[in-house]
Amino acid sequence: MKTTNMRTLTVSLTPQQAAMLQSAVDGGGYASNSEIVRDALRLWEQREEIRRMEIGRLKKAYDEGMASGEGREVSADALLSELKAEARKRG
View (cartoon, rainbow, N blue to C red):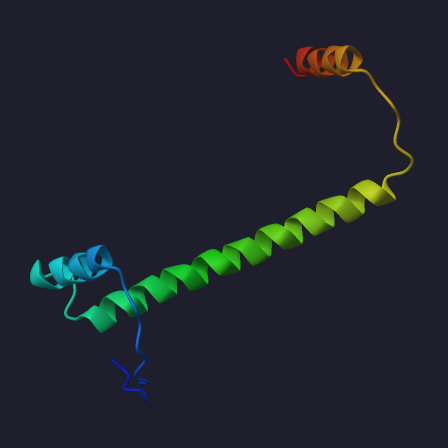
């Protein structure tokens, strides 16, 4: 494993969170509390990247929708009928 400079931080945890960390270390799932926190941060980074990608997709879909032309007013019944007709055409 590549050695890097580590920074020490103080983090406040609930007694339940501290017990969960200790249990994971005692059970052999992790070598240390720091390893657990680094793993949690990696997962958080992945979740944030997925969120950024989803926001990008939503912005693109919004822009495409706005560029697709003027909207039209349609009743719920008419929309449902149109969707059912499209589904029948597709089989």
